[in-house]
Image (spheres, rainbow, N blue to C red):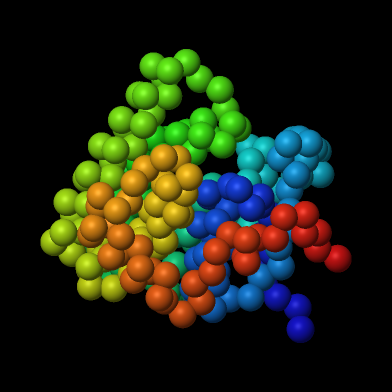
Length: 210
């Protein structure tokens, strides 16, 4: 039986993992196709037809191709009626967290991870600046989770999935999550949800769809 969704991405891409995890938590089977970023596959004409920005992830729903992980998560929540807000205020709060993540949390953690793993090079002052930004973002998140089990409302939403996709990579960026007990508790709550899986399980490297 053909699946509705096909995801194009890369195992090491945090945004790819966000979408793959969302689909898995939503209980939606999907095809996965590895995009070889180091070889520039994301810039090939055939891929640019799917994602005009030349990035991963890209999601095909059987009719349209969608790009940008936050937008894809919102599309999935609205379409599948899962992990979404219950009213306009909650919808707005979800967007607040996702926009904040892109602006204040993800750059510090993703770039620190890239420096630590050798994907990027930077002067010590630049590396230290991104590390400080990541720490500041973690403190904001820790403070909120000290008062709330989930980011919005009383159940997990795409805001939690979106930000978890960053937090998952924090340790690889040199951040000690043991110092953030509330984030660690929240992380375990997400990892106990039905359908949870790791990037290695959801996005096997080198996988090409038939």
